[in-house]
Length: 436
Image (cartoon, rainbow, N blue to C red; front, side, top):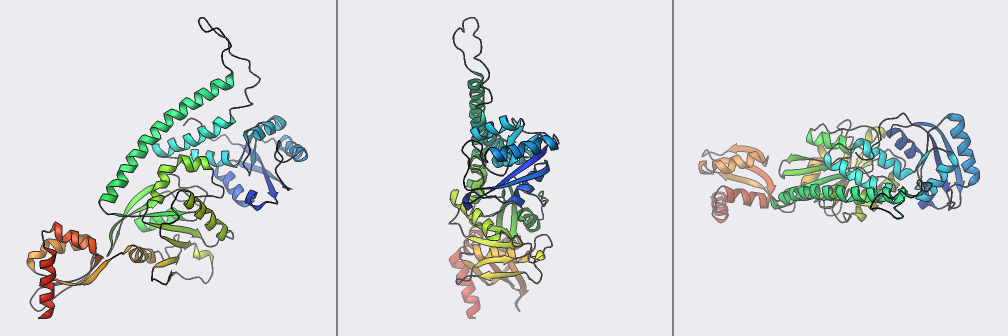
């Protein structure tokens, strides 16, 4: 990748400032997790309080001096801010401290660069990095004079800054073309699923809420899951067979975080489309997290930004094993639809409730009854078993097969069509059988 950082054993001084305006505040504990996830060794955290941001140095000259003393005495080679810095602020602080300065956005981008595994994921991260880097390509090269002109190239030439920006813009154009190509392929896959009337369920939520652990349990997959921020970056889609509902596509998506950089949202638009075009969302929440309500609100803000806030959603309160006395359960609304599920994906407690909840949430028109099949309907019987739509099978006194089935009405009609069975004739025979 263009800006991928190798593990260099960075040692950092962390900076966290509490502002009066709550919209400017960040979580210091979450920041520490981000730093550790990035593979950086935190040496010390410099805390402070301010009424507002200092326009030039962000923290003020006194705090800059305090940070500089810590950097020099501890031998740190990077200073990490738990805030978003303007390009000018970042450059001025670097001049004062004499070492690299990275803000919260740059840190998150670095973590994404380390975690991207697929071709699409790497392209999207690089695009976000390039946009971030293009705003930083100022100040650092102002000491360089204009380049010399050669034969046939006399004149003022261009500054090193202009050269950097031109190269970055050129790279952005190239990466964008590749991202669009991959996005088109993903879009074609979505259209195929829509054409086949396959339901899509997207697992979303705050980072490290346990999305991938739940995904692995439901699909018996082995997607990488770890107790760290942004363990999952690349989206994964698996097929899930639900009795009575049939095939459902389940998508595991990247976790959200407070003040998620807009550069990432823009770069990951094609990936986030798995969420914005889903039929149902499973919003996984760490119910043992003290910032539970804030995390839910942050995810809902991002869902609104990607226009996915009106999609039906079930809240999955995960990690009940951290709450003594809490048992697995499902909560319903006035219409009888599931709205909340309490479970522990790690221990598998209550995970079986999810499949039944998906059936109830996605069932628009359910065909649930006993049907009698004569030998000539052998193909239909096989189809029903293939789709896991048979709840029970018995035989009457005449040796006729009686199946208790449960599936979507549209799917049952499609099966009749595929088996070359006239629905009206079939229903008439069923009615005649039960009237005898």
